[in-house]
Amino acid sequence: MATAKRIALVTGANKGIGLEIARNLARAGCIVLLGARNVERGKHAVRQLQQTGLSDVHFIEIDVTNQHTITAAAQHIESHYGHLDILLNNAGVNLRGDGLPGAADVNTVQKIFDTNFFGALRVAQTMLPLLRKSPAGRIVNVSSGLGSLTFNTDPSWSGYNTKFIGYNASKTALNMLTVQLAYELRGTKIKVNSANPGYTKTDLNNNQGIQPVEVGAMEATRLALLDDDGPTGQSSSKDGPDPW
Ligand code: NAP
Image (cartoon, rainbow, N blue to C red):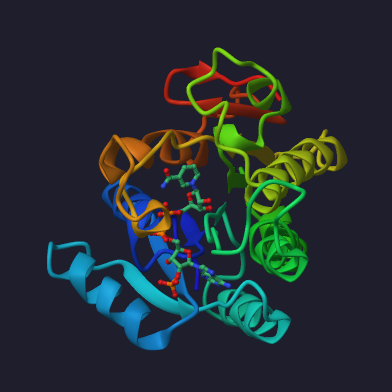
């Protein structure tokens, strides 16, 4: 189906920052494919947005740890739209059992990596052929200040004492995905960037975050809608570029 509207896929979009990004992209005129691993939660989120007049939001099942669901989603996008303009790798977890390297449960660390890093890698690889067909593809990896090696080693940084080997390292690895994918796609129209939402009130941190989702979703939304002269291969928050 030929359409002038941008096609955007947001993973883990049934709640939190992802739901807010989906709302923003729909408001910006995109056709939003709201990704969720749970059908009921995903469809409920779609209804929430549709009830506010955002009719071009559609549920798509994606568990980023399950390649079959990702492949099926890509086939669905191919047959309905023929291409993908925006991929927002937002799905992420923070699991009990993570901690400092001497104490963290290694199986838990692996599970965190399976979602936060391997999940984004799987989805990016699978969606790449569809993104290559876009006139201006955008990939945004929702990272974290906790993934910055510079911040992790700066005693004056507000998150300096938040040291979870699984979560923080998974976001560092995700940043490497941003760097290497941007390198691989240099010379194409696809831009790849990491977005740091800031400490946002969501279920991920038992709603301890200090800012609302409306603020947490700002930078990822901006990077998803970047003009052709925007950056690639960078990490940034709403306050500007972040150090790696
Ligand atoms: P959240 O409210 O817990 O939302 C996380 C979302 O990811 C949920 O929709 C969850 O689905 C989904 N998800 C988890 N595992 C998945 C999987 N295997 N496949 C598909 N979806 C999956 O947390 P959030 O704060 O909005 O987190 C969104 C992103 O922001 C994450 O990448 C997180 O690391 C990042 N981030 C958050 C903060 C913060 O302060 N909140 C700061 C920096 C970065 P279910 O509902 O099914 O669990």
